[in-house]
Image 1 (cartoon, rainbow, N blue to C red):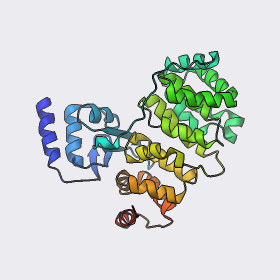
Image 2: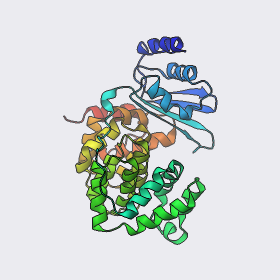
Image 3: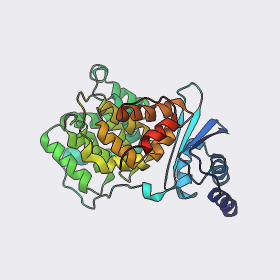
Length: 335
């Protein structure tokens, strides 16, 4: 097996640069985005050689742990009625910048400790909470308990969901907000950091809470970063005025450059919804254009749409789906 992988890697080194290609996969089309040294066909073959029978939407771990990618993401979609897999590869390790995690055990109130223990013991419920967060706090949620029901449908433990939802509804004081900031900055426990993310969801009007959540979106623990990304997307539906984003420059730069590429579409959507300042947005584009333009070039329309919407929002221009025109606009930005 190692010999096969070695041959494929040698081929990849000499492959022409590519940003996105579609391959006919076993469960429908597979589109590769963001590739540089690898070609889509070579990567497709390498994944099949190293993990035969593995669904392509589960290939990110193989790409990182076996094939040497700095970061990767894969997801199965069916927006068009058919299965379609998007695979994003980040090859340059300099573009992946997870935030440092603290090494303390922050003193927590009993209610915080209980919820942290509950979510730490049940990753399926954490995943269900993540999936339900975009529905949290809206009118339908208040009337029909939509987010709880959504989390329950996704396999969340009803008792833990009740505990978490009740806790979050009551953890809305200034002391809770300050504690959440401290936990995200210093606590070594990933489950405590998840609880801090949930608490900051109560602070829709506070820009520093948005900045802390952007930092959590590049947490090295996937449970923390995924809940943070979902929280940001959900909060963006409740925020009425623009967020001042310059305080989160480092975190956003890392996300747009390729850290946690599974969050890329959601972060773009959230930045547009929260009215990112166009001048600041142009700075981010200039610093991290490659993955954005690769997404804009995608054949999969829903994937392409988020990148194009972000480009329109920060540029004040509309070049449609003409990626060459968008590339010319990006390269024409001043240093």
